[in-house]
Length: 474
Image (cartoon, rainbow, N blue to C red; front, side, top):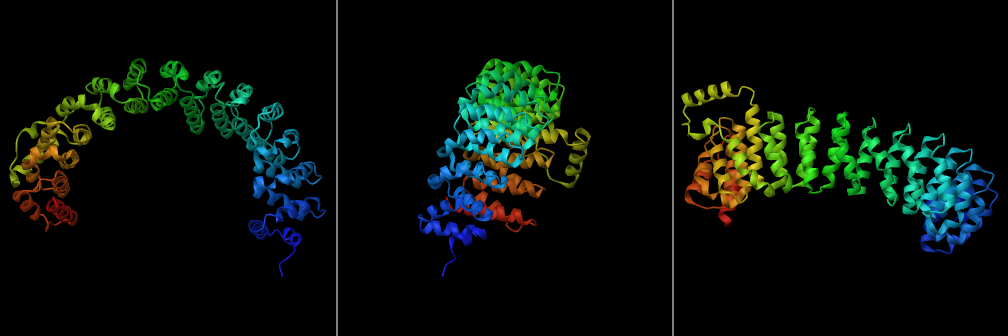
């Protein structure tokens, strides 16, 4: 025999009650009837269950409203929480919930604020109550009040000045949610732009991130103010401002020119964000990236080339510049792989580039050509030359990019075949992989790949076998 519902409520067997409701929704009426119980646990758990089933609790709304004024604070709190879970159908409870925002019990104030946001009805009482709660001593209530104002949507536009003031709150959570809510309210967001720009100086990165996201949501109306602070004395502000403009991805020459100025900023992080922003904007930004390469230091060159690489084939006008950057004197001639020549080559390489800074730069160039030069024979020939670079990391990157370029790399097959004999296993690996991707099956290629299936490095053997399998299927 199953236990009476009252006993289940007394014992907090919520799962069993919900299971009964799932089988028979008439049980809901019985649960509602227990809202009149004098036993606290029965009443409390009845309210909790009605919250769990949400809008199916509509017949219990009048009794739940009575529970909002119960002498037991925990009953009041749970009733407020349930009203929020029921949602817009509980809008008649807004006057009571708004008053509860002033309750002496913090948890009641919190649940009332949450409920008003979930109900989502922008009445004057709800808006006024939540605005007043923005000045509450409780951080959690200020946070929930700010969030709920955003949930009320565009009709809560009168709250924007107060939310702007909350951007100065001592709590990062309040500041962050306030910025988010300004964005949600939307209709009056333009009024908040000056305060949002000021908030870019906030010491907490989470707040700055949220403010940036809000400005992106606002869109073009925020651009003049963002352009103005690109010259801000605070490098953090410059950095987040240029990042925000980049996220907007607006192809406007005025914006691009102002962002490109920051490619020469005295702070490297700002320069990096400027390059990222131009990459996001895309094709129209390519000339500005190209023009900055020559006067940049090695680190910045890498960043700019990476940005061009991210733009992809739309950056094809950068190919001649990249090819020129890839060349080194050693690339122009083939060096016989004898011991003496290898030794000479190593000495010359070290004397020219002891710390490999230039090599890492050429690696970035080779990678970029693999993304940008899909239809460029010039890029293919430049990468083929790079297979003779004195640094193996450059040769490896060149082989990898030739594979990415696909069939157009068939014009330099002899260079890739020669790279199968490279002294470095990573180069042999990428060269064999590239031959498989290019997809040209000749006796010479198959024979050369067969020569690697017993290579001393397992991954080279595996790559050669895979390439042979791919070519055999052609």
